[in-house]
Each structure stands twice: as structure tokens, then as C-alpha cells.
Length: 287
Image (cartoon, rainbow, N blue to C red; front, side, top):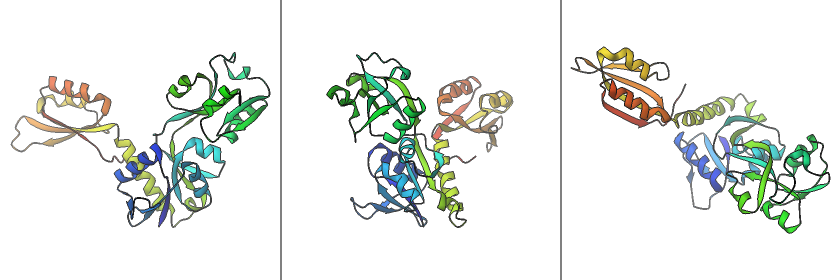
């Protein structure tokens, strides 16, 4: 049984559960407040704070987990990243009040008070920049700290930047970019009994992610225009051409296309005389 640590609330939790379900691992809860769920015969999920996932994985309470890359970095725990899941994209940034004269990191005065809920990352970042600071640890709402005179600068998570603007702050430097990660404990990864299952899990999740921006397209096309159709439908390794029963001069072309190319592809196929065009989503796509 492989134990998976997942965030217990928030957007990371919702996205992670949806991803696992699409990979065929639906969480089956015994009650609404349950913090443990079965995910088929080989996996069980435990639900903890996103910030605690690296701790649970590193300590061996879970074999794998899903959390933000920023939280992995802040934990300082020795875990391995198996897969970048792509969602939960944000950045950790240095920000100052709009009225500040600071325009870039090098202008942050020595001894500035920096409010953050990421003290490890902030200390290391300013240390590498050789700027001595005084850390002000907060558990949230760092944006208010400069306005209360608690800090001169903040290091906080930014998604669109709207929260900073609303609170009269602006970015001056990006500390790191972060997305959700599938992490694994070194003990589990080095265990020959568990590693194959962990590799299969990563491959299943990756197949779902790979399919998200792809579509499966099918169309009946004139046989005498196949060479032109092949240029329109390159697919993964070229389109699949299937004979149509009693089709005569018609064959069926099947291919995987990029989501953002569907409109142009259909228009090109129509110009070649294609008919019966069908586009559908793909649940999983293995290389």
C-alpha cells in the first residue's frame, strides 16, 4: 500500500484530487470529515496541511505527496521531485510600498525588516544578495505589515499581483517560481518493492497532464488528397488512416492535435473537402 499525502483544503487540494481521479485513482471517503481515503487497492490518501506535506513525506509517514514547490523549498527537507504538475502556479516575490524609493533588490537598505511566512527562503535569498535583514515572521497577510510599521519589505506569494496592488504594494524582485509538485521520499524511491508502483503512478499522472492540451480529431477525407491531409494532420507520429467500409474514394483520418490548433486544423481540412469531422477530449495520453 502506497500512502499519498495530499493538501486538505484550497485550490491545490481540489486540483490534486481531480488529477488523481482522472488517472483512475478516485478518493473514497468514509465520511465528509475523514482525513484518510482509499484510492483503489494499491493507494491510500492522507489529507494534511499543504505546508506539512514535505514533512510527512520526508519522515516516511507518506511515500509520495503533492504540494507547492515553494513549500518544499521552505521546508528544507530532503525529498525528490518526481513530476511538475503544472497547476498552482505562483511566484514568491519581494515587494515594497508604492511610495518606497526602492526600485530593485540592490536598493534594499541593510538592516531592513522583512515580513514573510517563508523565513528560510527569505533569509537564504537576502544572504546570497549580501543584504543583512531583520526577519519578521508572519503566518499570513504579510501585505499589511509595511502599513503597520512592522516591516519595510515583504516576501510573499504572488499569483496575478492584484492583491499587492490593492494593498498599495509593488514587486521589485522574483525570489522563485512555484508550481505543484509530486514529491517522493528517498526511502520509498530506493525501495525495490515500492519503486515500480511509484513509477507507474507518476506515469499515470503525467499521461493525464499530457492529454489536457490535446484533442483527438477524426475526419473522412478524400483519398486523392491524402498527402495534403498528412501535412495538416501531423499527429504524434503522423495521422492514422483507416479504410471506410464501402467508402470508395473516402478514408478516415485520425490524429492527436494541439488544443490551440483545432480551429485552424478544421478549417484546413474543410478546404480539402473533409466531412464528418469529430473532435473529442483525451483522458490520458501515453508516449
